[in-house]
Structure formats: structure tokens, C-alpha cells
Length: 231
Length: 236
Picture (tube, rainbow over the protein chains, first blue to last red):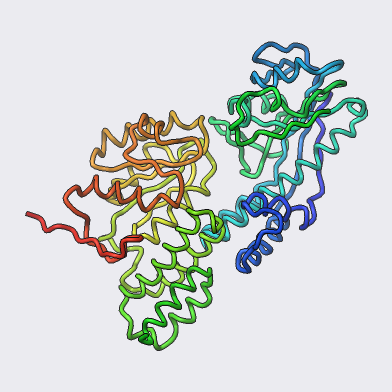
């Protein structure tokens, strides 16, 4: 499959707010004090104003699964958990990878905010994170609509640096996607610029017993552990 | 209660309630002129200390704590004895290890240190060992703060610590960031590790004890929680 460039629409304020409060540690219906609420409102508005979302998507058929590595054409992902997960799938198995950025203007605005106030920078930073998460959800939904994937079930998305996927896998994602075309650069240590950029992958299979490897994993103290959900 | 005590309570409350506008009004009022800078600083510090305690017990969010810092910093602008250029203050050079681009945590730590009375040289992201060493020399700093959110930059942090040990052995090093914990910090050769801004005052106290084992330097700011002014022992 060829690389596909997408220009996703930015989410509405309400969608961003939901993710934003969650990121800040406020549970649903939690009391949010007025100064916090006011700063959040300004930050979310600004984050949306300064974001320019652009994404690049590419997929490939999985050709081999070992105990530690999933191999598809032009990409290898080292992960015992996701390899184990892949062995439980049935029928056709594909991997779909995307990179997404909100652009440099938001980075500059966060940096400018730091000069004025620490809290303003923090709110804007978190608002940017909420925006990018929301846009990533939208991209996942678009990928699911690709004709050749419509009859396959998707896993949850995963990214380098999470689960047992080392950050070094970021280089694999980078070579596979060539996201420099949408302005994403990679530092020697695997960090991306602009800062509000993410890469993620999902597995698509005809038969998918779970959404993630969590039910197969013994690390019950993992902070990212997802609840069991039988497919 | 004396009118000045009312005003000091108001200041403390305004910091805790994240109200920099109220701080500005109080500090612009004529009543404030009769109160010493030390008393005003104590009131600001008390407010922030309570905010930090609330953060530590999860009864306040990071967002609330940062807004309290903003309110305190609003007050600090009016205190002539609290100048950021005061060379008598202990100086900290802080930055994010080269290769990492996440500087939010380091900025929060720098902000908290500033309210504790430290002179801060924040080098930001992309800071290599040479840059850190030069900045420490230029600022005549006694403390180096290193931050890394990514495991892939730990080796670079180790190199920076080793370079600092070789060239400036008297400098004390504090590290923090998601990629670290107490054990790793020790292995890397750091003097101290701080998991969050909540622990920072205690960590800085340890660091200062390493710098001045017989006592602390004289400083105009208050120590969190202790409400005492630190006095440097006279030179023999």
C-alpha cells in the first residue's frame, strides 16, 4: 500500500475538553476550581488555533511472527507482547502505521507562553496533547474505512516507548513512513519534533481475540494495562 | 489581629487560591508599605507551601499548584530583596539532556526552585555536556539539574555527569524525569534524585547539606515548612 497523506479536521472544543481533564487527573464530575477552568478554556482555544494537523499513513501485510518480532514488508516491530498477541489472530494479518503532527506553530506558542507564565505553558502543552489524541482517534477511524481493511478487525493502537516496545522502534516507524514529508524530524534518541507529533500502529486481522495483549500479559501492575474485553 | 496580620493572611490565601490579580492589588495598596519584605515573603511562601502539601496528598492538581506558583511569582516581583540577579543566592544550572525535547518537567522544577530563592539558569532542551559545563562555570553555579524523559538519553546524561565530576567536582548534581528512579540516579553518579516538585524542597535541602555540611548559606528567603532563615557559618 502506498503512503497516504491526510489533513484531518481539528476536533471541537468539547471533544478536546474530555481528554484534557482526564490528562490533568480530573475524574468525571470532579470539582474544577474557577481559575483552573478559565485557564483551560483559554489554552484549549489557543491549542486549536495554533494546530495544523497533518498525517501520513501506510500499511503492510505481516509476513512473519517470531517470539519477539512482528515482520511486515519494510518494517519490523520488536515486542514479545504484541508478537504473542499476533500469534492468536486468525486469517489475514496486516499492520497499519501512521504519523501525525500538529505542526511547529503550536510548539512556538508553547515556548512563548513559558516566557510569560509556567501555568500558561503547562495548560497549552496539555491542551495540545489532548488535541493530538483526539485527532489520532479520528485517523484510526479513517484507516478502518480503507476498503481493504473493512472486513478486518483492528487492535488498539500502540506506539514506541509504551508496552514492551522499545523507543528504538521509532527508527523503524520513521523509515517505513518517511514522515519528514509532513515535517516530522527524529532526534538521535528517538524524540520527534514538532513536539506534538505521534506515531502509532494497529494490527488488523480477520480474527482478533482481544484488542491488546494485556489479557496475555502477566504484568498486572502496568499503568497502561487495559481491561479485558473479549472480541 | 493586627491589620498587617490580616494582610499577610490575605496574601497567603491569594497564593493558595491561585489569585495573582488579588496579589497585585494587595501589593499595590498603601497598607503594604508598613510590612517588611521578609514578612511578605513568609506569607507568600506559606501559601505555596500549603499548595505543595495539597499536591502531595492529591487534594490539588498540578494545574492548581502551578497557578499558585504564578500567584507567588506575582508577589515576588514587588519584593526588592528578592531579585533574580542577586548573586548571593545559590545558583542552579538546569537543562534537558541533548536528544530529548520534553522540557515541561524541567521548567516546573526551575519555577519551584525560583520560588525557593535559587538563582536559575535554565538552558532548555538540546543541551550537551560542553554547554552545561560552560554554563556552570559562567554562572559560578553550585548545583546542576538534569532532566530526561526518555530512556534513550540516559547514556548522554551519564556522560554529562562524568564530565561535570571531572571538571567541576564541587558541583552537586540533581536529576529527575520519567526515565529515572532513585536507583538509576545513584548508578549514574548523581547526588540526588527528585521524583516530583512535591519532593523538591526536601531534595534541595539534602543537596545544600552536601554543599555546606556545617551549615547553610545565608539567604533572604524562607525555607519551606521550617519557616526559618538559614544562616551561613562565619568563615574561620
